Image (cartoon, rainbow, N blue to C red; front, side):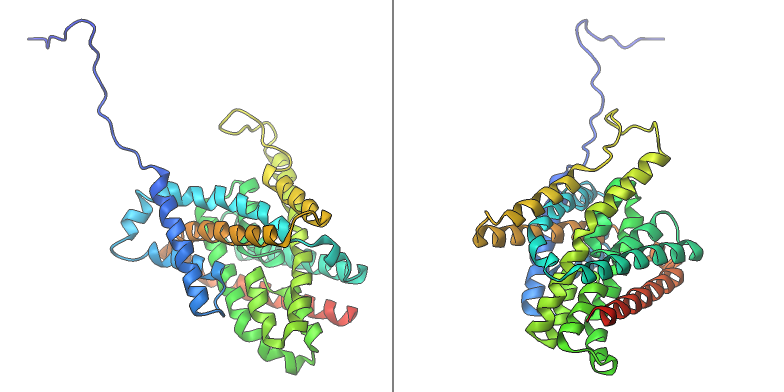
Length: 348
């Protein structure tokens, strides 16, 4: 048998296989965010973040693009869904006017805490009873009770949730929040709500900040102002909720380390960043122009992140739990709308 001769001092080089880089996916996510901004400018009733999720879902299912999105672009899109989401959540703290929130009074603070607790626990219980897979009950409960897709992204970071569970939860919460824009204004008259009371109801019961603005503005500036303040109060509860989930996960996985060999932090850094940004906003040292730039950057980062999450939605997989997910979405919607309405009526 003849042996192949290899000169001394040489080595066999392994066949290189190109691995996808994240830059392609990040560029697509940025393009998706820009397109979502254009959609919002053309149709102001469609919030930018809602458009981002829907565009991500659409791109992931277009015949000419879906293979590319699920292969070469996947690393960058997944990175956008994680890292850009964290950065956007930190900047979200700069929009949290704690002084304005506290001006609403302790009765309203107690009402909002009660609404968040009832919605979170009720949705979590119902989702588990319906047998939704993975972390979907936890993520959907978080989205309904706090601030939609942003809250889902924050909790998924500490719970280690599967990307498909995150994407499916974002899709459901976004859909239900979008429906609220058309349904809730029709109920103001039959429920006998004044404009300020309607604004508080919207702020306490609608998920995403953009959806709150789109819904409340139909009743005028008084409703919009109340809605935004109550909504900011719900956003303020994001940090304690994420911290509670982090402690729960840490307790269940005691001794488990991350891929870097370190134990997971009891409170994630982006949550501390969120609190630090809120504290900085409360000092009043930041000029209005800086806050406006921060708000623009926050929307851009969250839009790119939600586009990345939307691109992970696989509709055939989602359809297999579609009936149960729809039942959970409807049930949670009834819970948050009913509890928030009762809370508003008790505090006006």
